[in-house]
Image (cartoon, rainbow, N blue to C red; front, side):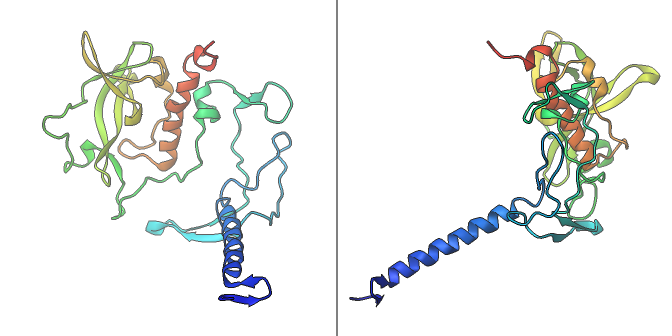
Length: 260
């Protein structure tokens, strides 16, 4: 018979078995590579974990960071030692954590943030990627488009929180990333960043405003602040986005309750 090797084994059968073996090895490899971060998992109650995993966790690989950022290895089996500002309602595995204090700052649930580098994201030329318009005169609001500077910012409770004083742009993507919102009056005035993703332009009787559904007007005061006036780091960006994201569940008491 054409293609027969020996007995009931032919070329098609050998190719099929070879494909099965290859596909099984491919799945094994992919499942190991997708566990470079966040593994091994910790026990929900005790925090114990396997310090020397081997079955599905890949061996460490070294990555060289851009712009002289050094090198990192993953997985590094380092535990996240950040304090958890939350507590369990009951003592059993799987019970959700309930935030303590300001839930948007607890770092749990939708307000979780990653422990990223406390350095700004950079362009291909090594310059800070996200900056306010005042820091780069090469960027401006396009002619005919709405300039948000000077517009009021409204929280989900319908109260005005502050006023937009500047726009922060992404110099690599040519996008608006943040609005700089001034809060308070006089010497007590300060600014916070508002991600563009949480903003909707809304018309009111007094004119057009930037409406933010995520948090109330009073809660803008606790938005994590950037250490520098014209620069925001990756870590600060994550904390800012987490605050507004957490507000979608925690800003109002009824948001955490069932619909029925």
